[in-house]
Image 1 (tube, rainbow, N blue to C red):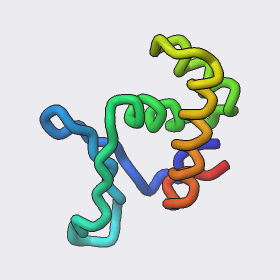
Image 2 (cartoon, one colour):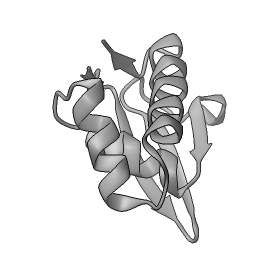
Image 3 (cartoon, one colour):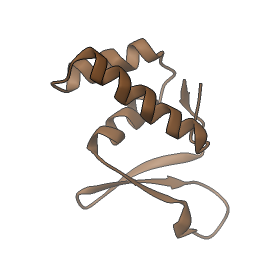
Length: 88
């Protein structure tokens, strides 16, 4: 899985925002605010990774058990795929 390339992550003050590229003028309805963990996962998906690789990266970065890391990764990636931001 990886990002589809039409979205970029930007840090604005203490927040992270996902912005859709292209299309001329900025449509504020296409801004998605995410937390630090979401930004970490988003950045991991800049390159193609497997779910196991993503879970391993989360485990290396955060103090969480494997079941929690896998659940967070699955939930987040599923949402990104549903929104068209990532592809499996």
